[in-house]
Length: 239
Ligand SMILES: [Zn+2]
Image (cartoon, rainbow, N blue to C red):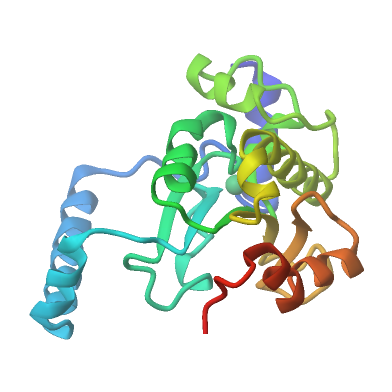
């Protein structure tokens, strides 16, 4: 790791949003033990809050409504998408919310679990995007491999890189699941969870920026309308 790179990281840690690596000081096992205790307490409360029938239902199988590909970033939360995500969201998380680095998982959600929505969710202040748009040659080889598949311009402004990457993921997914999209069985959506309000739509808004390859606001609206859905699903629409 070059001295400049380290200096850059340090500067970023001290003066701006967290970056991809070295965001905090290293933790310790005592902290981890505390966290496990908290997790166990949360689990006990969760069990107490749910009836036995809830778990029985889950044990029967899953029919998730959506396959979700989002960044591993801890700031992207699932209750953004579903108040009760259990059984509803087939979640795939990796750095940079990519198809390429989790293709098997995405294929499983779309082809085997038959979710009708495949959504890629990028987010503001994404460390993976920041890293991919800069020189990351010195990073661990396995991380490098997962950054190499993010195709954005070097030096791109953070939110522009985030949007480009989401659009790239949708384009790749449209190629991968071409038949399902054409048959009206699958909608591929690209979105940006913008907690930094970089897109000036309000902090925390989930901005839909791409539907089946359309990035124009009007076309997105049309593609998401009930009419378009009816055209896609024929007489099998839900009530
Ligand atoms: Zn990220």
